[in-house]
Length: 422
Image 1: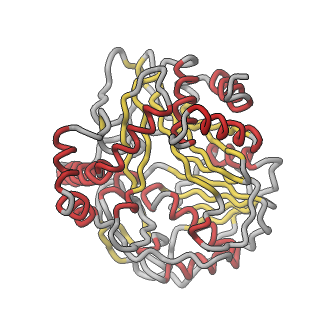
Image 2: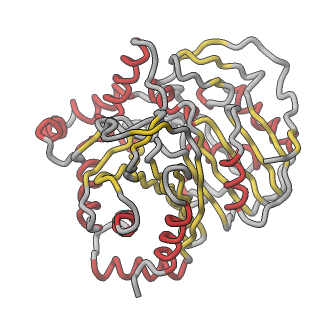
């Protein structure tokens, strides 16, 4: 991306201080999260910089001012040098075009803000946070709503686990017995590398990352028809399970896919008290599924995992593994090889409805909201969707030197145009 950098001095430079972050943050550091929203009023870089600086001044719990580091849980926090890049670029024809340009020219700054006419794009290091943080950034930069700063720097992993299992022993017993749990679970595969328990198998060749992305939209009338079909044929199943199962079946007929899907679970749902975390507190659970998986089967797996508290066990285990790895010299490096016959490892994520009604009236009425995360390894394919104005907007992230964009984009295009197969 070629634009006009405009990074005003946000505050007189101060001396940073060391703060302790969660191992979950370290696990995600280095990956990038991007989003594009529009239409919005053009952003004034100076005004946006001032708003972001005010956020940094509130302390490290807002995440702004932290310098992500994959080697330690001690990160530097400096509100006077929050590491935010501001750019102004010409307005693109579509939100998808702007997103693709960000992926093609990633930033190394903790946070990047791009104003592009009626579109606003943000990119941040995944170590700073996920969806909650991205939404807070948008609202802050646009000066709409009143995003509430996080009340904690680190998620209360141990306390949450105690609340989930010690207060409900049957949950712990069910997990130990393997009931209501995914067939496979481990650290979130999006946390830079091959998913836990799925080590390299078969011949390998040298590989280096080459992220690619495309966007596909399911029109509102098609979503409505799909929901009606779901209500008629598979009542009680979520539309997410319906779409995820159908997408997996479609891809299984297009690519060589791994027999697991990964689905992120937001662990904030298990907090006993409101904590409003802006940092990372999501578990990625793997579910073993057949090629012809049904929506009802997937819905049952997801519901069983949530009810059993498996996501909390996942983040507790993942945090412990990351802490142990750091004590032994650092988290594993990103893969540098790929199987000669790659199998797509699919991750499905849905942000819900944007704008988020649970955040109050922000005054935003976007026609576009694209969410994107880097794929979790050479064979990773991340499918991120958002409901906007009744339609479903989806980004598909993968490595272009592993899978064919032409093949995948054509398959998604056909499916999203006619998911009912009529």
